[in-house]
Length: 160
Image 1 (cartoon, rainbow, N blue to C red):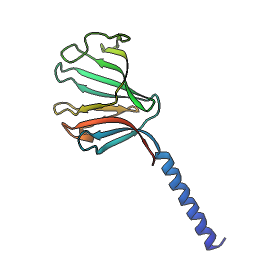
Image 2 (image 1 turned 135 degrees about the horizontal axis):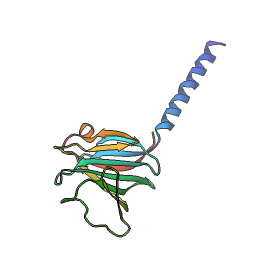
Image 3 (image 1 turned 45 degrees about the vertical axis):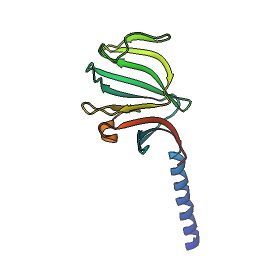
Image 4 (image 1 turned 120 degrees about the vertical axis):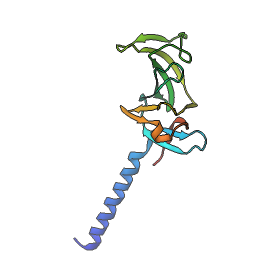
C-alpha cells in the first residue's frame, strides 16, 4: 500500500471519528443558565421521561424538601414534592388530582401536579446548598453556579 493510500485511510478514519463524536453530543439537554447573564453553567443529557430533582433545606421550617421534575415533550414538568415537616412555605392542602403518600422514612410525598414549568429557577442557598440529582448523580449547585446565584433550568436541543 502506498503512502497516498495510507494518508487517505487516516483522513477517512479521522473524519469518521469527528462525525461520530458530533452525533453523540447532539440531542436534548437539561441546561442550567445564569438567571441574569444567561451564561450556561452546565448541561446534562436527557431523554423523554427522565426525572431529575432539586433538594434543599427549607429556609423557614428548616427541614429537607425535594422537588422532582420530569422531561416530557422537551419541556420540564413538576411531578412530585417530598418534604419532612409542615411549616410556612410548604404545601398544607391538596389540590384537585393530587395525592399524599408517606415514605418509609417519614417523608410526605405530594404527587399529581402534572404542571409544566416553563420558567423554572432557584436561588442557590447561602446557608445550605441546593443539590441537583440527575441520572442518579448528586451535583452541588453551589459548586456549579455559586452561592446566591439565580439558576434557570430549561430543556434545550443541542446540534453539536
